[in-house]
Length: 199
Image (cartoon, rainbow, N blue to C red; front, side, top):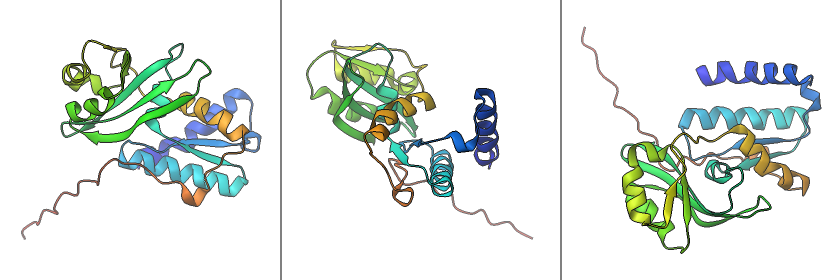
């Protein structure tokens, strides 16, 4: 519930600081994952509802693609997010100087060495980014070999990066229907058994 309680007030505050109103928004972009179950669901539901209510276009963007857009960097970029339970979410992109990104290895969730091995199938120097490096950096870099370098684990997906990915696509007329926005979790949620209480 904290996600839902904080999101719309944060949007209202941002618009006020920029001197804008909700009617100023001409298009929306939303991160579709991989990511946390609650955060993705709240973000996507909010973007879909806004798009319907305001009749503006919306576009879903992969979280890993947004993370791959490191300012001033081109070439192979391997974003990895900590998926918990000993796993990471990762994908490999070839980022161009023009800001475009070609997905070479699609998003995968699994053990760090397995996910990194998929990226290792593509030759060339590779920059590894994301918080998956914090716990699993050694395994990821070992699987990629000497051609890999780490940008540091402090890089997290940013809303601004999602917007930068979406802006030229929205300008070209690309759209995701609000009803078609779907979260990419990477795996099924864990449901803990209900604890029975006595008395």
